[in-house]
Image (cartoon, rainbow, N blue to C red):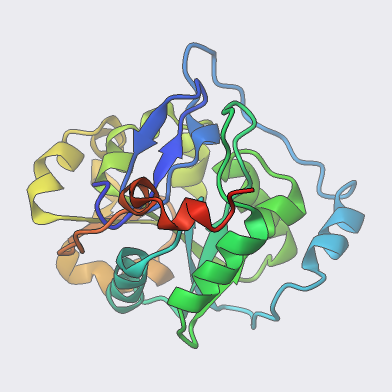
Length: 254
């Protein structure tokens, strides 16, 4: 599902395309025994206060969808799926979590400031916010990011957004079960990707917690574990295609 999404990185430094920026290179957790991460919320109180500086005020009970990725660069495909997520999953807002660069790759993404500026330029919507929270919080894995956000906003409801290709390999993410058990997950995909997603390990293990597409609007108010798969026609555009054409990268050539 790389159309309408980014080409991000795996932990081995290999390129991995995916559709909704939901998979960060940091989340692939292969060939190692998964160990749950622990967070000392008391020790992180000061850090939470620092992270919250510059972050938006969010009323208690707000439902926020999280779309993570490099956004290198952001484009109309990201805008399209964000608008669909707002409509389909009962979200009050969507936050784009623009990830830092990958230290395992010789050539990283464009500078963070440029990617943030581009994202804010293409995604102009009163219910969508562009955030560098991961860089601010110093998190490396999606589960870490979610824990940090939940510590800063303990009374806000978060929904993780991903593509069908992410779901197919979700069981390789670090602490993926923790993610499923603590936040609802919204999966958006092209109709032809439905079969592949249904065969995913995560989909099989949590099949009893799946909401039907006709119930998708209830996802934001659902108690985890809960997930929903909806078909969304995608735009024929990707960040990797834009980079291949060279215009985006030429902006940062020395």
